[in-house]
Length: 392
Image (cartoon, rainbow, N blue to C red):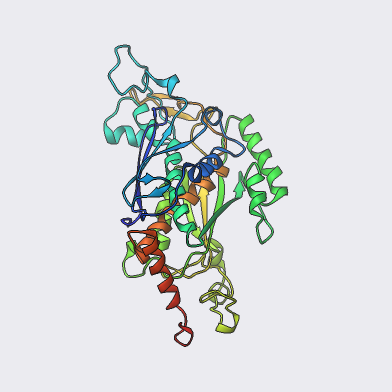
């Protein structure tokens, strides 16, 4: 369910560029290209990325919905150029071309190649792989950048870090040093695990293979009351899970303790609510946060913690056996320039999708056609959200 903050993307991996339309942002929000470009640069980083990241220098151009640095309340249009486009002008031309263009018919296991070609009746897999490519996540990060900018007005902040790569698990000290995470080539807070993760990536590259892993998103400053239990599609955790699983290569989602909680008793899992004398400036705080900031489909006011499983990408330098779309005969899968590991970048994309869901839920709760109206509704809610004896 998304209707308050929503976005659409268009564009192919090797087309001219990516278009993003974002709708629902209140009027009066300060927004500049650099607010979005920071995350676009973070998405392009990370050890294990391929040659494409050496070509692209992603930058967003805001082409509609903003005037003199302030949003207008109308749809916001973004444009991100593909710098690799000049190398693909004939193969990806919009208009018909006279010269024959080589078709892709060798299917890649683990990609959208086979089901996509069959679904849409294509005889050229390039029609599938261009749109199914993770290049589209650039547009998502741009939309997420606007969502983050909106929520930052209300003290909400987003972070992510790498928990595992190629079977190597991090054990970071708490609280996490987020500046150290951003300096890390694999975006982990555990220096010892960092070296082992890099070695795992190097070993996979040498073997012509790929590796996956796990990332965690943490969101601070989220108010209590976002989402709802009244219908299945309004539950906040369900909405976040759908958004995460819509990202290329993401195959699992957990909140807080996640699957680890299945081995514990209820007394070891549920988050005790603290009495007023221990509030320390927060509304309804808990002694722990094993539920990841969501109970009954509603935010609790604690940090939202989302853990995400990322599979190894399916384009391998040493391709797996597969079949040809034309003949059905055994061939080696198609190979096109690709990454060895996308896990460090995946955390940034996951942040963006969580931000989009939270922005939608925030506007669902507080509304407002202008930022001032949204803020007034938000502040009124906070003033009435404490125990009856303390309401001001």
